[in-house]
Length: 332
Image (cartoon, rainbow, N blue to C red; front, side, top):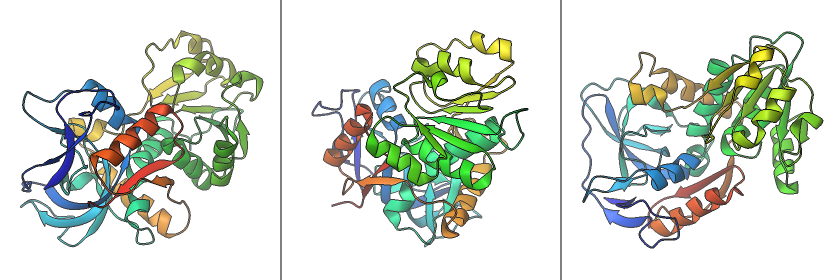
């Protein structure tokens, strides 16, 4: 089967940073389903793993987490899907990725693809939807009010996760949603997603907003953390998803602010007892999309799934200029 992988961790402009390869066809066992991949999207985690993780000597590492496709075969213990089902999912970072024609994934972290979306639109959703949902409702528990505040600040509003978080917070809660964006096109994107207010993360945040009960930081947390400590309401809740080199949370103590880190891969990595919650969550996202409550956050379709287009997508994400999700669709 065709796939895209690498054997050495390289800068994205290196010739062998990502290459087109052929690999054996996988065979499903246990609770795995085998999916014929029709579309994938690229996330910051793809670029981070490429830069940091080197496969064993002589082996290939295949990246990719988001996918939409069709089930072609199932393991003997599968109960939730059958061949022919259209699915979408965000995968497991401890296994080979979705940048391949055929991909194995545990059925418990898979959802039924929204019927109203095409393959590319569906592939844009799973990782960011799971991340945003878990961050808002499992970690920050936004349905439990912070005394004296009914506001949430989402930092990095035009990114993939924030683009879903804005919609979920606006559509499923009564919170007043403020998001950050610094360029005209990203400000317009965030407003179109439903943010009540947009502020500029290139300026001090504490000068632009006062005492939100919840702050969800999706990028550049190390740059903003001191401002967040200033502006967040007493007894507020602060969540983040990125990887700051250092994170000084001592300034939050005086306000009794709780700090919550979200990684959507935690459940599949540790095979947690509630691992199946991600499949349930994706089915709910699918229902919300088909009901018109939330929409895909596809920003650009970069064309077929191959090394050239994936390198272009990685470079765009590393530039920090991506808006919404970058998707690739089909194999040449």
